[in-house]
Length: 382
Ligand SMILES: Cc1ncc(COP(=O)(O)O)c(C=O)c1O
Image 1 (cartoon, rainbow, N blue to C red):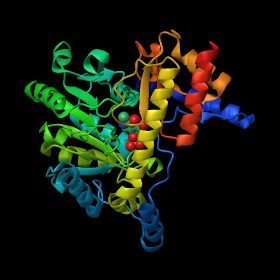
Image 2: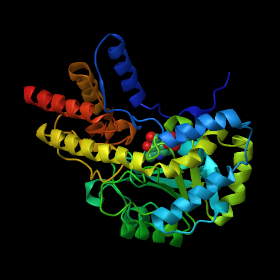
Image 3: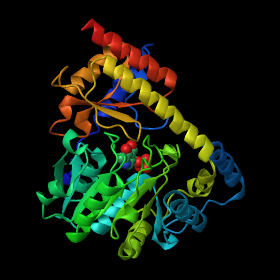
């Protein structure tokens, strides 16, 4: 029987590392997990308490496709508190994680055959969702010269474009678009009719003096994609949101009604409490900051010092071309020889990823310290 061409997207290679790591653990070996891209903490206490209560007292039926009003209001308040930006609750659509948000955003904003740019390296699901929808993915190669960020000059060379997907802070690099950089890119997009899809999932996890600026404040027609998975430490709750420009509110609503009916009700009702858990969540960020310091120092001692500016998220994206031309084989060696799992850059950059490795430092400080020591020891033995 026929299998649709749209399913022919690349696999997520890190899953292979995770499988190999699981084998090693099943055989009694120990593994330090620097391949995982999620918080090692559960949802904050306030969310757990709200979920327990909600389970016992609520029917948990479907909700509005765009989500329950109390959550949309809290999200709107979050924009006021954190960025001093007014966002009408009509513009907020609660989604099944950022992932569900991408599907809705890309279906509503682009047609088959449209040209949409994304940075390389960049989060591979953008590439795979776009191509599964028949949208042409236009690679925008970025590197140290632009701090791994897109620029108007780079975009100019790729015209015509219907869309641009940005991520700030980015996965895998952790780099942030500053207010001025975001402004330049947003102005270019607005002037050329390019719809920006701005992934802001790592907002709240930053190590710079200024918080990462939101695209809402810079581009009238941008779609902002957000999630409870990272700062809010709620990956498995499958909850996120979109901030939509006026003209996409109804189109996204119609698509959401048909594709998902509504986001998970228990997660929505409990998620309201997440905005009152700042102290616990900020303590997670303080731990990431300490882990980041330890990992970057350890990598430097191991001779791995060409890294992207790790200004946010919980990743270090390192050039390992002095060690290998096959970063997948190197990550396999580290797993086998020192029990450190990390992710090859090929998941993020089909052209140059074989020269890079992404390290996640979302695990405990004890694990990150041990991993850094093992990497230093490995380098000394070479
Ligand atoms: C940049 C980026 N966007 C989106 C996602 C997916 O997030 P969600 O769990 O909200 O679907 C991830 C997950 O790692 C990510 O790194």
